[in-house]
Image 1 (cartoon, helix red, strand yellow):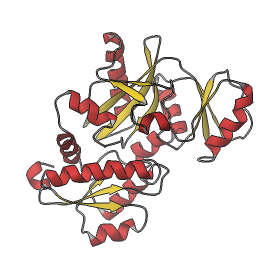
Image 2 (image 1 turned 45 degrees about the vertical axis):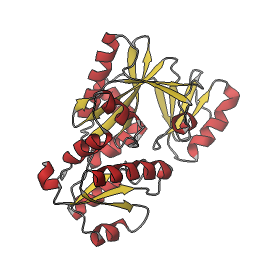
Image 3 (image 1 turned 135 degrees about the vertical axis):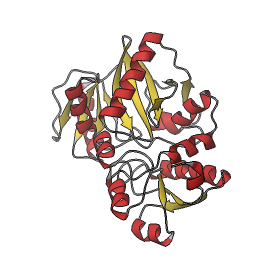
Amino acid sequence: MDKKELKRKRIAVLYGGRSSEREISIKSGTAVLNGLIRLGYNATGIDAAEDLVGKLKKEKVDIAFIALHGRWGEDGTVQGLLEIMGIPYTGSGVLGSSMALDKAIMKLLFDSKGIPTPAYLISTSSHTPAFPLPYVVKPANEGSTIGISIVRKKSEAARAIAAARKYDRKIIVEEYIEGSEITVGIVNGKALPIIEVRPSSGFYDFHAKYTKGMTEYIVPAKIKRATANRARGIALEVYETFELSGCARIDMLVKEESPLVIDINTSPGMTETSLVPKAWGHLGGTFDGLVEEILKGAKPKI
């Protein structure tokens, strides 16, 4: 959809919602909405926490810009609702969104396509897993490292599993990788410069992500050129395999110069200091320009 046509549309930025990432989503959505208004679009914000159908009808929405994170926003549910209502939206469709958020399905699809990822097991049990130490425990359907723990001793396992199961009955037990963490943003099929993430605590958890000064971000990542090329290729393969569209971010750990995929974000953070905007800015683009580029990719998925 071109810019001239988009200017005639009523655009709703969907944010908030009911997931554990609600507050982060509000920040993303507010930043996106402000960007659209600065650009002269007929835009409004809608909190998707309740009566979303009624709000969409009341505002006579033509296009939805999805700035929701986590469940009921990044898992295909709101995408399905928008398709039923005939409202075009930004980002990935129902299938890609649901497969990417569920880390168990994500891992199984990685295996089937030969996409490199740390060793893992999927568990629905509360028992201590038989898995080599150290390892990471995480809920299958959460983002922003919510409910995640590193288990370095057997005595820590039960607590880690209990923490993850607060958010999901299905958990992932994953090999702990001692290496660089990188992320590759993709916008409308084009890979952005790679960002290296260096948390001062050594672990990029929720606190490190959202506390100012706790993490250093290096753009472009200080990794070998061959490793960077491999990471970009893997990210684009993930984007294609999961049938993603619009804006996405592929997170990886680098083990002995080999990038291993650990997470897919189909609705990445969109504040002016979030990772995808940082990578976009390294190319000389503005935050508002990024918002507009994502909006241009909005279309019906059926």
